[in-house]
Image 1 (cartoon, rainbow, N blue to C red):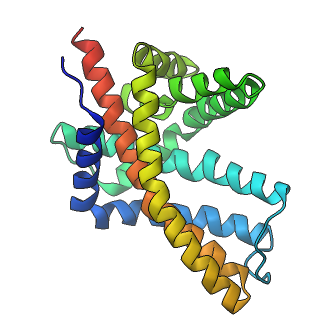
Image 2 (image 1 turned 180 degrees about the vertical axis):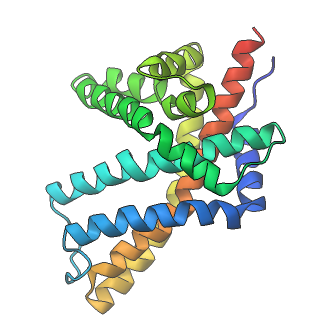
Length: 235
């Protein structure tokens, strides 16, 4: 079975996102606002004066909040939605959110294991990149295929096996595309924050950037996962 090229995947991701952007943002913006806002409030950033750098502690906390809560929830919601859209099925937004919350403990488990493996593999850079790419689709394995425990890791690795370089290249392309608006938005809000001398404006920039770019990455990852899945089934 012929697999989709990177251009096809990017185009399909844009089309799906653009055609449903109001609904997509209605599902993802509240998650980003709550997670980013609560984190910023806890770190005292909403009432702080503007500063161009953050401490390592604050950076780690921001990363944990986004990587372990916001991103997995958004990926869970949109993974199921994309899979259902591909089959021509519809489901209520409330059911998608309830489903994402229901599987969140399973998603969090494999995300934590994945991140831990990547960090441990950082001692050997090649190993870190191997885990980063091979286990990238653990959320999709939980949500779409219903895998539990550590089975999503094995599922993701099995699908990527033989497609590692292709998967890494496609993932890099999606990240670079998302990085362009991210940097533009963050840069614009950073300038505003400096003028207003308020770090809350920086936080607002992070919310806007993440709300716009994370859905694109989630949709693209799910379309590629489904492509890998279909190719494996057709072997």
